[in-house]
Length: 298
Image (cartoon, rainbow, N blue to C red; front, side):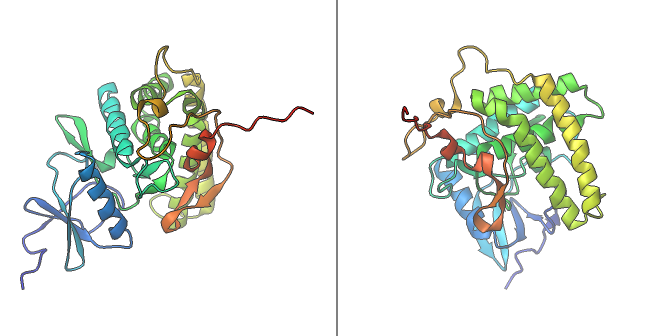
């Protein structure tokens, strides 16, 4: 019997995935506890005609097999142009819309990628055309992904991009994705929560420059300073006049339209499916969207 890995070459790029191989027009990666959900998610994308992700072809010899998407995957973060940030935001919105109201999303808003940074992007002609590496994908609130994208595509370029330019790009991302007003006001809070969680994650793994929780706490303090400055630069402005809210643009399949009535904040983390922690403020977006109860007069 021929080994499915025979003649395969290692793929580079990304930060977490290892032992990922390319064989002709397919990609092979070791199967994991996420394989079943990931397979169902990619099948859902295919059914919904979302082309910005690889197709799942099955599992052989303990390896998941996907179609290969030609292009370039950045090895490092760097500043990105407004056109590149806009293309990434449009693709993220399309991906979320493909899962909204699906069985996979369940009681959550959408299925989140949870790492939609440039390191998990395939570029063609300098524009992002696909997401890869869906191993961390779970149901969640869309602001979890939008907040993480804001950091990895715009804010984390502090060392070479002026704060006002970072703020302008985050505003562009929010406009292009189609966030409505309440979500825009909550975005900087969710960027902070998402990156605080990210710092804890790296600290616990003792990876890269994080050697203990104290280092993680120090990094969180830096993150707070940067995101706070960007939030001031954004001004938490309302959407452009005439912009329709995202909830009104794309009604959920099999679910009533719901309008977000107020901003929400990150109070704590709650465990989600597969044991992943979710930000309560973003994961509970459908709860926040329910009309507020009216008080009875005394």
